[in-house]
Length: 261
Image (cartoon, rainbow, N blue to C red; front, side, top):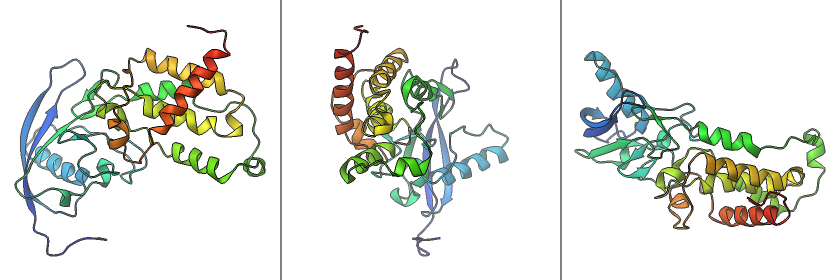
């Protein structure tokens, strides 16, 4: 294993894990012990060890979300010791390694805490609100041709880089979980900025931002107060500048729109 330390000693840990049977049930923190955890394990591999132990004991394993385990899908949404994705900056839960913890540590593991992300079970939350925001306008529906056609449109290096940086948002929801108001502004602003910067997104530019912001509000996400905890906890480093772009796009759209609501 790359970066592994053959001399690293296994760890024994105490886990305080949120258990909740379904979204209507009352949840609680449950304490578990895990032993002989390799520092080279990922955090999700450690949870796999816990679940294997629970199954061996005839108990119900802990439900949690994951998919790629490569830090690119945004599924591994866990709140670890009070931080989105855990203690390592710029890292998703699946890419967080146990070497970031110490033998004897107590680790608290919770789901995202936001009314717009209802808990399915245990650590698994329903993030379909993000999908509905994208469906409201986070796309280009006009015919823009194929890849060769797109490559023929001159775009400055600066604009292309800004669009690419916004496009790196993986939609994990860490920004919502980190925000005291459970705001989705960083997520929505990244999606709006990405398309607003590119000529392919120009046709639907005004309707896009109006519809996506309206859907964000409909989903019950809180207001942005520019504290910056969202950007600080974002695992891919989405910039707060995107929120400024979103505000400009929204005000511009409203100023030229018949929809003054």
